Image (cartoon, rainbow, N blue to C red; front, top):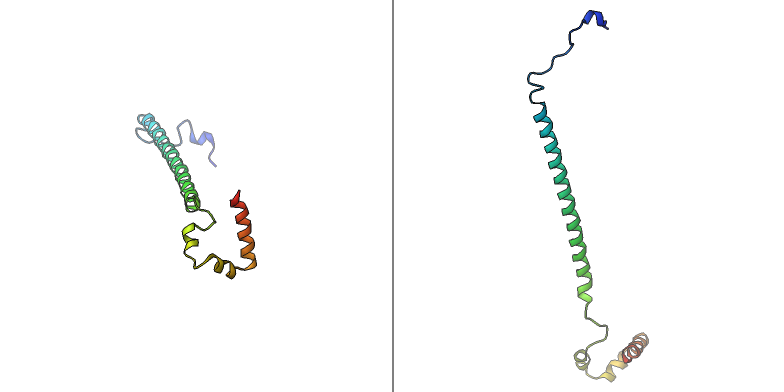
Length: 109
């Protein structure tokens, strides 16, 4: 390893030409690049949040809208198309009759 006395008082490295003259411009340019990058990241983050909110709303609508306004009770038109209500009750199982009885009590109120 070289001793300091062997090197002397000269600077052991060279500074590139015009290093100090354009130092300020390079620093300002780097700061501007960093601010632009941060702005883009913030913009991307807002886009992702809005996309997520819109997607969640779309899924909620797809799940809710098909069931909105529908009831489990058959309509009058569907029942009147049967040959006879007596025939319909004759072909129902005990479970279906129990369900009908529950529905009748529920909708009678």
